[in-house]
Length: 292
Image (cartoon, rainbow, N blue to C red; front, side):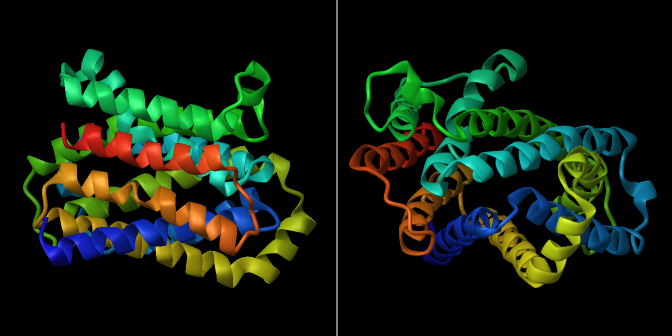
């Protein structure tokens, strides 16, 4: 991997961990995510209004609309997980998606898994178990605060990853005259559909008064957090131009280690040795899968 691409991916991983920590550090993670998605959707509508969307194939629009459902569920379940569980517990589980994706892609897309990829999946499963259980051999250890919602966020990520991949594959074949990259256009489209699903899903759990107070107290931080997320995504897109996707995916999982450090230094969490080892194993396993 070129040195500049490596630097961009590592920076992206750090920023993504910081974005997640900002959500966890909010007094209301669900309301914080509503603020972020609302601002992003507003910006998306403005940008999309300047484009000729007739150039976007109908199947791509359908896919962007459909993927909004699992994206919305991801934001909802992630928020609920952060309400209950530590960042050092939730984040490694949710970020293990690249290892579990082949289990879905094999039957649905006809992809294959190499022996090295299978080993990587096994390592991730073991790492996630360590993160969840802290090494305790009891079923109750797997029912810790936030674990269930983190697992649901993982499943939602698997679903939207497949839809996003299909939508971008369709879009890549279509002619496009705008200077705005197709990936960014698709990102804006899915953010609009995500907001239309996520906000109605989240609002019943938010009181108008508390949400207004949250907007006044943390609105600026939510906007900054959104900007961090967009920059992180942009760095990954740029890195894809000069580096192999497998290496980008592998290095990006270093975000798990950044999240662990941020959880300890900023949020005051004290993860046990087993959870630290599990986070490291998750990174290693995903790297094995990505380089299979």
